[in-house]
Structure formats: structure tokens, C-alpha cells
Image: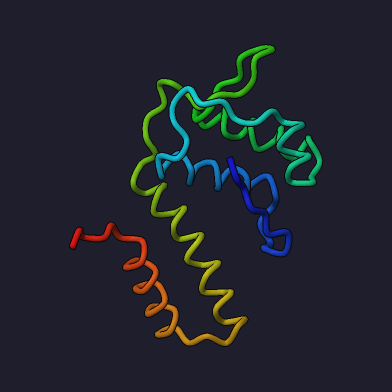
Length: 130
């Protein structure tokens, strides 16, 4: 599980972890029953305090997205309901906000951002066989 933190984002680190795990779930990149990295391991990987990871995992557990198995670890919930469309759109809106803020900072016009998104979407779409 690869997570990327943006300390200057203004969003608390634990919230960034929660949002990224939710995104991975919504995108199908984390499957039911899959184990999340142990708290200490993820904290070392991200170079943050283990309490921050523990807080993120607790919030994910409260949302019913993960379950803790005593002495065994934290796992994606087996009987979790998929994230509602509104939640998926909210996650995407957060990413869109970050992209727009970054584009303003880099002085990139909105039309250029849209064109870049079109190019990236085309590059990521499955290619038709010749």
C-alpha cells in the first residue's frame, strides 16, 4: 500500500491517510480481507508518529471499512458496503481541489489543466488492438 503525504497540504496527516485508504478501497486497489500494514511499519515508512497511523486506523474502523483482529492486524472489512457515490465524489473533489490549488501556484491556466487531464485520460485508456 503506497501512500503519499503532503505535509504542507493543510490537511492533518491522519486525515490524509484515511482519505487515501478510502480512495484505494473505492478504486478497488484494496480488497476485502486484505491486511493493512502494521501501525509501526506504516509509521516508519511515512516517517511519522505511530499515534498518527493509529488514529487513522481507528477512524477507518469506526467507519466500518477495516476491522482489527487482536494480535493479528488490521484488515479491510469483509462485509463492508462499497463507498456511496457521494463519498467517492467527495474524495475525487478533494483531489480536484488540490490539483487546482497546485495549478494556480504554478501559474498554469485552467484550460491547460483540462487539456492535460484529457491527455492523461487518453494515455490511460486501454488501447485498441491494431
